Structures are given as C-alpha cells and as structure tokens.
Image (cartoon, rainbow, N blue to C red):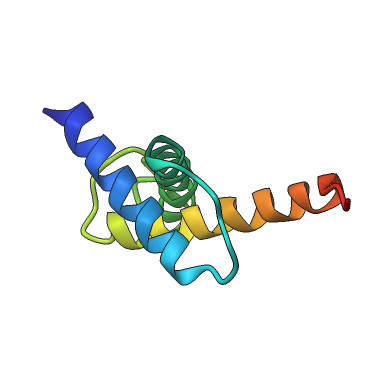
Length: 89
C-alpha cells in the first residue's frame, strides 16, 4: 500500500506543480508522476532540515506541500537545463 500512496502523491504533486509553473511543459502522465516523485525526494530533504529528528522519508502533514515545492524546484531546474538545447528552425 505504501508504494501506491507514494505514486498517487507523486502524481498529484506533479500535476499541481505543472499547473502552478508558467509556460508549456509537454509531459505525459508518467513524466508528471516522476516529476512529483522527484519533488517528494527534494521536498522531503528540505523538510528534514527543519524537523528535529532529521528524517527525510517520514510522512508529515506538510508532505504534499513540500512535494509540490520540490517538484516546482525540479521543474524550474529542468527548464533551465533545457533552455540551451532548443533548436530554432
């Protein structure tokens, strides 16, 4: 049950991050889920910096919020990395 919840939270976080971030992100459902999962890892790491016990992978009430914020950071960094690769025809 834990992996299914992790995938669902990743999908929701990825969808919310794509809706918040301006611009066109051409991704499918799987890429959006992977974006949310990466955001969960980034958000969990940042959240662990502010908690007393320092555990990165525990479930917290602010887990979805940090997942969305982490997904926004990942989406921003992917956008920066992809800027130089555009081919103008």
